[in-house]
Amino acid sequence: LGKNTTQVQFNYYVNGVEAVAAPVFNVKNQVTLALTLVAVEGTMDLSPASPTIRELCSAAHELSVRLGSTLPPGPCVEG
Image 1 (cartoon, rainbow, N blue to C red):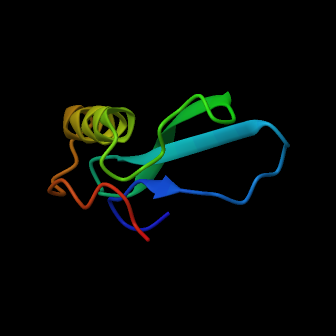
Image 2 (image 1 turned 90 degrees about the vertical axis):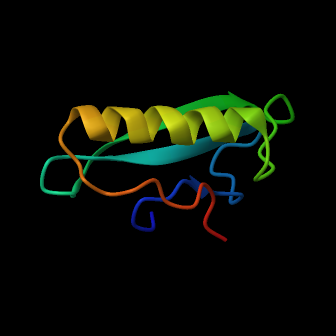
């Protein structure tokens, strides 16, 4: 994962499953966990502008702030 970004991964480890994750930062601005969405392939819009990705990024940033992170919201998807 890049710093303060959501990483969309298109290398499938399990056929028929896709996932996207966003890092959550702590008070030291270190990654402490990741919010992850997993779905059956083709049922989740993984385009950079999708509402699913935007909401995931927003939730990860909001949780980071609650944990004391001072990082600003980063780009939602790193290419």
